[in-house]
Image (cartoon, rainbow, N blue to C red; front, side, top):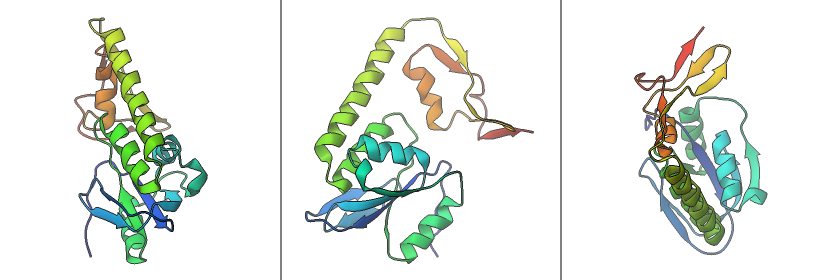
Length: 181
């Protein structure tokens, strides 16, 4: 059995049924080839639901998850059942527009996804410019309130405050997701 190891998991499942061949390489470096764009989508992480809508294919979303689960086991099981699975693991801010474009390819909504990706990059650039040279502020990313959970510097949130060049993460020195009970 193939073992998948990720520190931040994000998955997308595609069932394919329309004309026009598509191909992308996911964040595991697995090539996903389909004879046609996906017509039905299940998002196995909340942020992927948002990306599917941003890519212009919210109407194809037929399922999504609430809460957490064993994403590695879910992906392995779905692949064993013959489903096409795209693994998206955003680690850098630049991964978000890249993932939008990948979804556009797989969903056949490339124009819409490209426009959304360009708008995202443009907004980030405007924020960088607006806050360039401003004094930094301390930032705590609170993932949950009870128990208190924050995230470390190696996740995508590490870059979010720096996009503004005006914030320093309080827990940047941590090396993983932390919980305080």
